[in-house]
Length: 300
Image 1 (tube, rainbow, N blue to C red):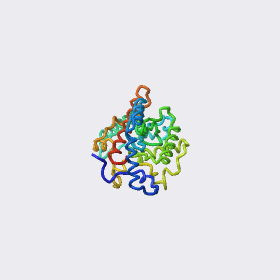
Image 2 (tube, rainbow, N blue to C red; image 1 turned 45 degrees about the vertical axis):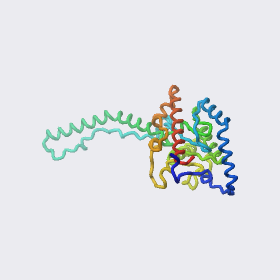
Image 3 (cartoon, helix red, strand yellow; image 1 turned 90 degrees about the vertical axis):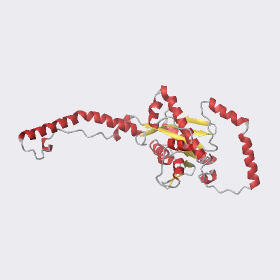
Image 4 (cartoon, rainbow, N blue to C red; image 1 turned 120 degrees about the vertical axis):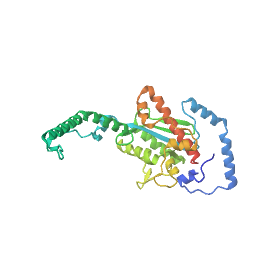
């Protein structure tokens, strides 16, 4: 099954650079030469070398397929953003609701019930705080205020590579913007899934905090992302505002490779030395899935 009709995006469309038309005969010759180059043993050797180096070969053409994984910032850095459940104050008999009870024994019974309920709230407050804190930390990775970029995975012609193992987020972000500059220069589309809704805003906002320069043309009029970026979520929407889908569900629909786990587990795997490789493999699989989906949709 080929690419979906109507969704083939050319590099020229992405970069919107006017160039003189190519004569059909010349264009045919160039395509023939390109096909010959694909069959050259030298390229096959490079792909084998990529696998030998621990990368995973994937066909992405001239594009860059990428994805990020995030995790919570250290607790001391985000504690100020945590809003704990309000602690119950001293018991106030004036707050007891007696209703129509007028008999002294009934009123006393309601008072004792209210006291017991308040005592239970006081006793359970610390547990509520811990539960709220755990929930806060779990979701912290989803916001650049409470989360950070742990790793960036990307695929080029040679294979899939994961960046960020040294733990220096600022350097990783600076590297990413360098990759962006290269993509602009070399006219390489940077393809991802939901990158307009999550990845790019996250990276830009973390760059601001860490004093990493963000190229001025990345976000135009504070609304439009540079044309070098292609968001498969937006391609899937077909112009229908708010129409979204999960990557794994889209991959299943298109008959592509599937995700190997849940992103919520990534940070825990990444932080432990004994499970770091499992996290790396998860990110590589996400990039592979994104690449296959992009290919089926005619983007690359």
